[in-house]
Length: 475
Image (cartoon, rainbow, N blue to C red; front, side, top):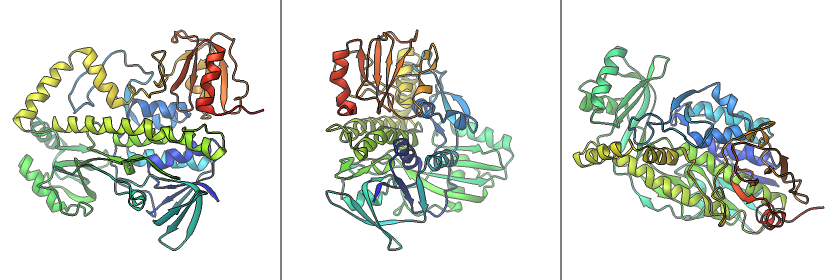
């Protein structure tokens, strides 16, 4: 029996496979497409996702293929300098095409021993107390202990489970594609700059290989949004907004996206869970979608591995739903608010100007960027020190960096006192006796996803908290 079948080979599914393999869990990714997509739907990683890659020793791979940009203009595209004193060692956005992100994550998952099967479409599933049975389109039947649907906004897993996906339907549609442009680059740049003074959902950006990424508002909402638009639709809309179609030709791919916001009623149904776009969809404003899915997987991976490996305390796997669903709900609200500020309507533009003025206050600007970057999240892990429930930023230690010690995906007790012990949990929690000038608390207990589960200096209090996150003692 397979431990975990992951349906969907996008960023969330591949990240989850890697996280499971760190704990020795047999993970199989089934992806219905025969080959990786050439569509570049997402363009970068925000701060928290960059930290995630750093925590797992992957950041250098991503930095080699990306470009660093200031983080300051990612709230509704309002152009501001980056806020000072962002609570991170990585105060930037990493521009990197999703195709590259997918490739790097697939390489990582394969290196760790995950199996990726392409051209495998799930068509049916059922579950019982011992596991999940799935049927693929070619008639193959597979059996696993758990299954995770990472198969996108039109998730087959979610549909087969009958999980509700309520929210707001698409009201405004946008065309997106890659194509070649006959107009000179300087003409394109000048026209785009002029149009974007009033239409923020319009743009043509060079891809560096003779093609452009083209974004333009659609004429309406398509009856069947799964059908891609035509090149002529792009030409018509470009002429409508810019007075020229720029001589677009030779499209590589054409698609459309809407402003719908939907959130799964529940993230877990027995032995089947949802992650990424299968659990939530929202407008792409601010570029948070791919990042939200990666962070879902980072939260779920160690918890599901603990369940498979038999040491998960009661309620740990359910905490995936209780922690991540409110985060997604907040992102849905936040992206819709940003999308409203992109409207050319006079009322929306008035609010945009007001928000722009408010962002000149450093605290306001930092608050908004930290929400985009997902570093302001605080999970409910109980009362106590202000660090509780927050992700721990990377800090310098006397013998290196904190994140360098987290590559294995285990829990970690950073003890500056030299008096604490994790005896009984040594197979799940690393003890690091070291000091940091950046940490003003005697010791912190970090979950495998880097969030603070305990802070203090009392051994008995620590022993009270360890079982909640890391189960019963062994040995």
